[in-house]
Picture 1 (cartoon, rainbow, N blue to C red):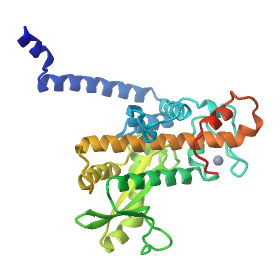
Picture 2 (cartoon, rainbow, N blue to C red; picture 1 turned 60 degrees about the horizontal axis):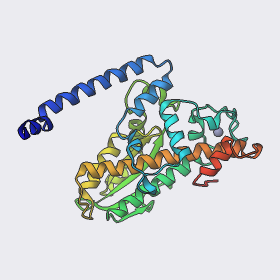
Picture 3 (tube, rainbow, N blue to C red; picture 1 turned 180 degrees about the vertical axis):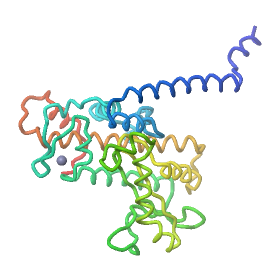
Picture 4 (cartoon, rainbow, N blue to C red; picture 1 turned 180 degrees about the horizontal axis):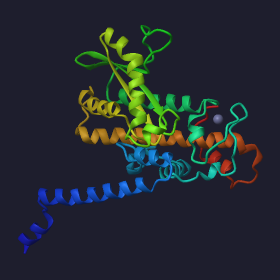
Length: 305
Ligand SMILES: [Zn+2]
């Protein structure tokens, strides 16, 4: 009896692999059907981006600490963006702030890319702070924006010392949106197009100077829906191998934890930009405590004004 029980519980790796292959194949077929049903380039680009590496790992994050926690409003905003649904907080808003004056879409794209009000800069700087703190927590000696050798005030975001064979690695972070005019055509047909293009741009800007100084350069390009560029992903694997402190965890586990932390951070910042701007636009006009502006105000965690 005990022998039969053992056989039932212990599935051979080959059988398990076949189960996994069937499951993955059915999900792949389903995904292609979703893509075929898309009626706009934006929808295709969103689905392709959301289907990429790391894009959805914030959904796996167990809220055991601040780093892995989204508020109700933040979670709702992130989920609606991922689903391509309208954001209730933008329901009654048609125009951006007076300095900008552009029309606002109800999925948050304009607010995440608006050049007025500092939202994208705020998100970049907070994301950078998180990345920097995470590197320091695992024992790296690093600095932010201290490379005086770069000209025209262009300098990478983070310098990490003794990263690989005693060399310094220079990192530059950028968050891009697949719906941007320069990306939408490529992003709706090619996976990770926006992130890869940003990696190329950053390489062009920094790599030659970095290498002439004997350093390594690595761009970290992230799409607003959460997808990482290939070099950002490689960097986390390298980081887990090079970390000075004994991590007591396998590479895969480190990568998963690091990815979840950054994924939650990005979704939190996206949500904060959208809700803060909505509050700025309609907040003063609204009365009572149940409207979107008041909801955003209660849950809003940063102030970048
Ligand atoms: Zn605007």
